Figure 1 (cartoon, one colour):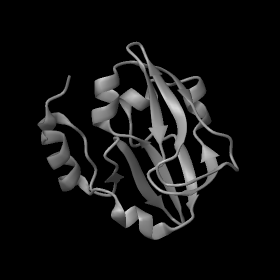
Figure 2 (cartoon, rainbow, N blue to C red):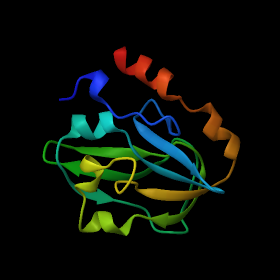
Figure 3 (spheres, rainbow, N blue to C red):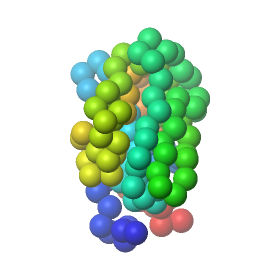
Figure 4 (cartoon, rainbow, N blue to C red):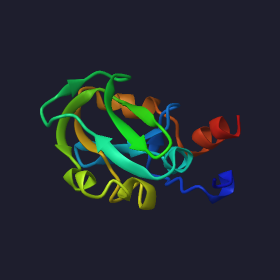
Length: 132
């Protein structure tokens, strides 16, 4: 397990209390799980993602991540329509462990209400939550 000061927490990412992250990509928003979440889960062996075209509200469950330890639900950081999924995760679920904010992204959304992104935790607030 990583120490808190070892976690990768990019400045351009917003976080949920459930450890998902969201990053603005043009008009869309990319979503994944934080470095903390992947570290706690251990080796990721499977990622179940929704179909492109699916719509969700903020807080809805949109998929699951399976590790050697457990299965965890994934929750929408903001509402929107899924416009892309990271299909590489089907063959390479380990990307979630090795590059959670890059190759390990999960879905891309067209947000219903882009202002919801501003309601998420910034890096400092997320770190405070982790310190508990």
